[in-house]
Image 1 (tube, helix red, strand yellow):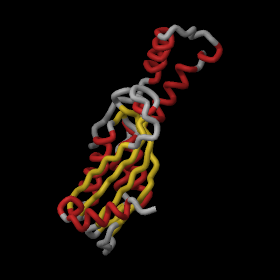
Image 2 (cartoon, rainbow, N blue to C red):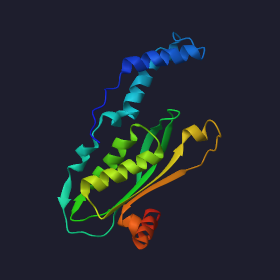
Image 3 (cartoon, rainbow, N blue to C red):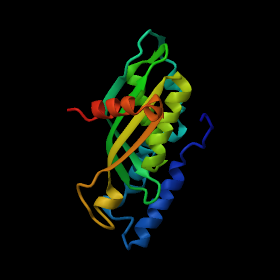
Image 4 (cartoon, rainbow, N blue to C red):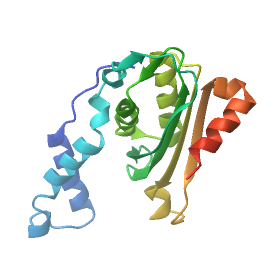
Length: 192
């Protein structure tokens, strides 16, 4: 989990963007494109900033608490970049866990989502990374993660199905083993 990655090389991104502009027949000296390579490099540095972020930094706000019911944070906005087309997918994460003596600071759940989302990703992997990380770091009775996202690689190109939403889930511990707990958490996640 805590593997050290290389720093994002903005100079190489700028050169690559120039090549793409030339390849599509653009004039890289046109006024509107003069700063485009730098803008794109800054954009990728922001969108993929989680690649150099250690999610363990967000697992330090753990508190001892005798609470044994569902803790749920719903509708956490996130964005990620699909590794297949390098286009964004945007959605909401819903995270629940049942503590076993410790709880995690609520804002840390959102920070953990961001840390894993701000990488080249696929939604299925992202869902499991969040669930597995929480199981390992806070040792709860169970974790449930549901992600709902719209993928621009499917909505504005290719099949062009605007409005489609992909839903993925990762259930661990009691949410996987106990149908009653699974049913309860999934119904809470979808109440509005």
